[in-house]
Length: 202
Image (cartoon, rainbow, N blue to C red; front, side, top):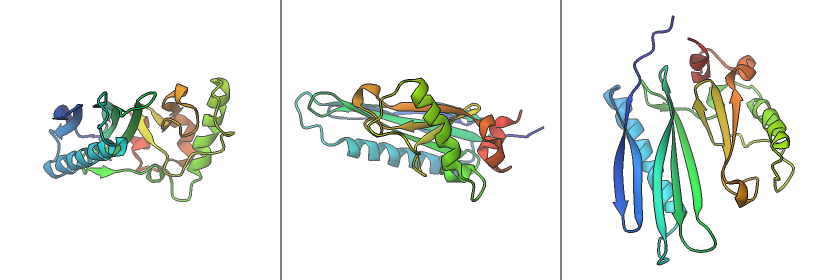
């Protein structure tokens, strides 16, 4: 039996400026230093998305930011920051950035850190994505070969979701592309200290 700490409390903090309204996560209820660190990461990440979208100088420009809690259990917190902006042109743009933490320490995991040292996690994740692209008839710009080693991801219950930004591998009409992969397909390359292992166990 695992003895996990209780889930942290995730509340919405509001930030606004001309033509923009942003909701970002504020963490509490856990260890004070860990909560503070995660909150700093979310503030910096939100600011990065705002800056990436560019200036709102067009008279019709607008921006809206929000977040989605993907996982908050078993000492694993996975949250996506999402920013939509119209800055002129034919259509707006949406950007997503996800963070996965060990909630009790505030440690943010990279994709590589979820798997055993030296494991070919890029191949293990790319193969089911190749199959899904074919099954879903997604018209990619180029034949899909593999994810980036630092590909965007989040954890949701017993799945790892790999995703691609608008225009990253396919036309705008597809939006952001999400590919959920069961953790149980990856057991051979998951170490005991990985948050993936924690999510697999009751």
